[in-house]
Amino acid sequence: MSLYFARSTGVLALVTLLLAVLLLAVRGLNLTVEFTGGMIIQVRYPEALAAKSVQDALVRAGFADAS
Amino acid sequence: MDINEYRSYFFIIFPPRDDVLSPQSAPDVVQQVIAALRTEQSRVEATRVDIVTPKVGGEVLLLGSVAPILVCVALMIYRAVRYGWRVGLSLAVTNIRNMVIILGLFLSAYVAFQWEFSLISLTAMGCLAILVTGAGGVYASRVSRS
Image (cartoon, rainbow over all chains, first blue to last red; front, side, top):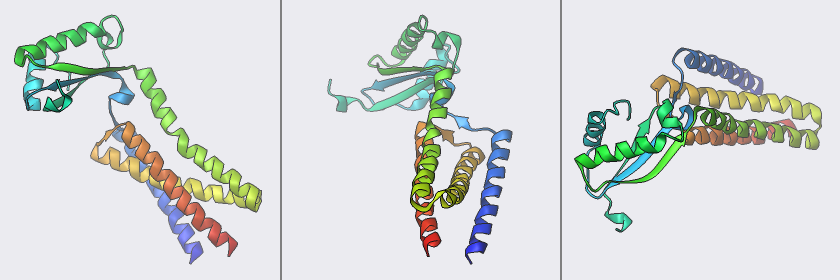
């Protein structure tokens, strides 16, 4: 029982390792600004505001690559 | 103005460009962004500005993955002192296997669904790996004693 358990978890470890390496190589992690670098500006409004209108204002000012 | 009077908070994120990263031009970019937002809605206020260079980001990624490795080493030393170095070494293999399973599943999920991998995800991954390795270590030392 214990040997079977050890073997099956060993196979599971191999499979997950291969899967992870394959996926990382093919698609890659979706890293946030904390790792890739960049600038984060936190702004606040007294009124409730949709994120779309802030985005539109940025695009009009020429900051199209900001998100 | 009291902090509770602010209704909405936004994070504006810029990709790593030269004018964003250099300390001379970054304040200008912030000024331009605030000016642009003022045209839409006059009562806007920037509360925090963070600049991360790609080099620092890479170092953070490296530092975050050190903790699970340290746990593996510490558990191995403990078992080597308590049960002898043969047991310590063989159970270290089990530890590494447990950790590989958790890290593999975690990273595969993040890559497959393209979830955003942030500092919090990195910490959660480390915590989960440490917890599972600890639980597996307790189980393994019980089996080896009986």
